[in-house]
Amino acid sequence: MKTIIRKVSVTEKGTLIGAKNQYMLEVAPEATKPQIRQAVEEQFGVHVKSVNTANYRPRTVATRTRRTTQTPAWKRAYVTLREGERIELA
Image (tube, rainbow, N blue to C red; front, side):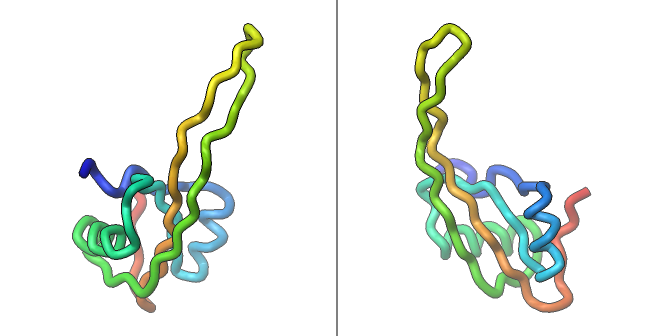
């Protein structure tokens, strides 16, 4: 399998849930919760309390030339860390 963690999402929602010690990550669609937990713990050196995931299906979009294409399917993981631990995003 390729890399599990693709990127850390820095959005308005991502910063709001950061107050609850949670982080939003874009992950590989075939990744499981235990794999995501292990990848976060290894890559960032933190202890994961829980992992929740959301799958996003492909959407059909019209281009400027009236053709239709599909956006790729992707997966988002909401990772909750233990109290007092943080992921440095800078």
